[in-house]
Length: 307
Image (cartoon, rainbow, N blue to C red; front, side, top):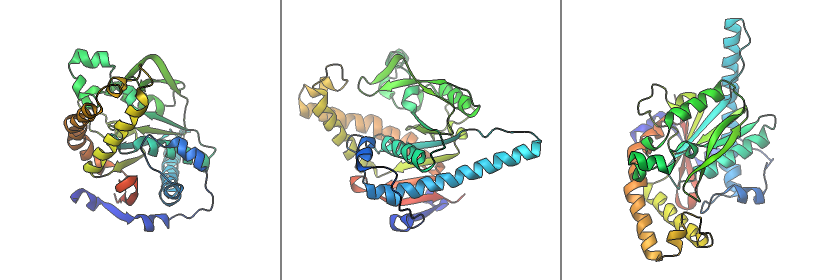
């Protein structure tokens, strides 16, 4: 790929040698709790890939803090260091959420004096009622289905040091924003922002979401593999949803399984793959790090942006 000329291509074996640590900052039980449904992640992955990654992020943080200090010296005034914001992007079902939770946990353990918080951009989707009014319910997940102005305002408030910022909560169980429910972001030292749209260009805004990021990560895999993971996850969701009539997947779980899988295949082809090819993949070259996955979610290559 031509875009990857701007990256150092690093094999997993070479990458794991960049930072050696005898300290494993989490247990197998904790790791199992971090994994999303159908995602695969081992302690070896943590040691080989993610601990070196977190120490690279720490280098970027120290560089940002040094630049901020220099600005203060230049201006002859105290300039407060703004929160360090990490963007994590990639396709539906590629494992972004697992990566985000793991990075949050590791940064909290490796650098315990840092307050590390995490949000997902799902909370900035328009509610289903609004999507229906706009006639774009079948475009859910596409750029126009997000309240980007609200997301940009939120990131600006975080960078400005505002206290107790409310973030809407999205539920994958009901497939919608939960009314009047929020999570609070309380002046983090590090904020991780995870979502398919974190590196996308704006529709109309003059400010990009990624303008607020100090470090960005793209989780990558071949579309055929991601489709396989998407369908496997869908079937696993059906295996539990039949117990809960309020679950969005209940309607599919109690019906014909083959019809449900056919529907999921159609959603992948007409929605998720289209979104991936048209809007998500073109943002891959904006990331500082690309984690490339192969079969069974195994990371085989890491790409580090040169400039």
